[in-house]
Image (cartoon, rainbow, N blue to C red):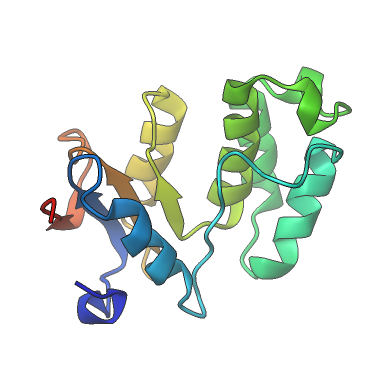
Length: 157
């Protein structure tokens, strides 16, 4: 299945589900090639020497609808305030993922593995009714607590 076969995607939440190796990441990368999409590797490779604000500042030009107030709310909710002056190499893997989450959610279209964080689930629930944004979330299964507009189930080839 190609990304073009799935377009246009409806506004709101779209789940891409499948087992390990089913092609979720490949599909997200292809969707991320669309002009209005943003793909971000949660490990933030090549940015070890950057501080959190610099990581987000580098993302903003790629996100014309960047929401600075949402960014600040996410920083607070995810407990990143004490880390703002640190370089990424000083953070744990989990904290690096939170940094990427803030960057994605403040201007997002594509996100891989939403995780169990209640703040992320609540954000996605609140974003589900957005009139013009599509939020594509890939995981093993669609979270039944979220109002998905579309579910794309991938089978392992």
